[in-house]
Image 1 (tube, rainbow, N blue to C red):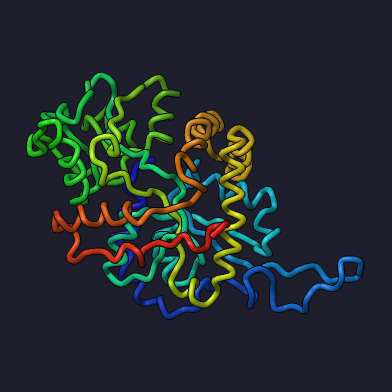
Image 2: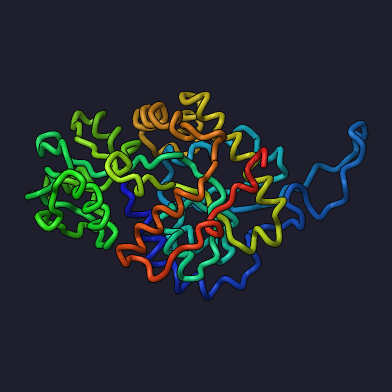
Length: 354
């Protein structure tokens, strides 16, 4: 699983569809008038056996990619009844051609999975998305290649071929981690491989790519094809950004703040369950998505579960300096036309305990 889906779908396909649909009612699939309950009459006293069951509020959550261990907390919250406890009937959907950001901004989905880099660019194009939780506290992505390419330092990228998806941010990120160790990014051959599979591409025409270790790295180990992984955060602090994040729209926040709070209350419990119970959480994801490789899911979940919360005071917490540092770096490279209002791009206000 590379970073390309979270980046390309959110950036290339985002604007045209979003701006046409932003006038829709936030969470277009929702049927009830209140977030934690419904438009039905209040429930009778607990002792009244004839009380009608609570009508649940139906919402969609759009993933950024095919289901994987970044998403386990969502599936755990659904399977374990945490959403139902909050009065929600949650449907987890894949993004389709439009992408999750477009679905959320247009109101087709109330919530979505995205990444800080995509949301940063979207905000500066007046796309009304807001990050409401960091799924993982630190960036687990980086540049990786098979062991036989001998990538022990970013300087070793020189003379090698990198396979990417055509974004200027790729070369910028490569330069950011090569410069401190005396590397020269101009000596890297960069080609566009689009959505090509990493394992096929490194056997065919590239030496390294940008991947998430929790999925591609773990799969490489299981295949007996171990890789050298150079994490972005280890070489450039400004690249230790939040990826993935959970998003909603400004409209959803303004019109149904209690729904946002209810969604995050349940989702937090789902990710906390995955932190404490990686094996059981993996089983939940496998049950929900039986096409996934069970061995990969279990190994990935074991590696990733401690990283959901990591050193944060609570799951989902985001820091303004993380948002600002990344945006300032992009602005300095002229990848952004103007500075980002970091405080408007994210909020911790709906996390439990806020």
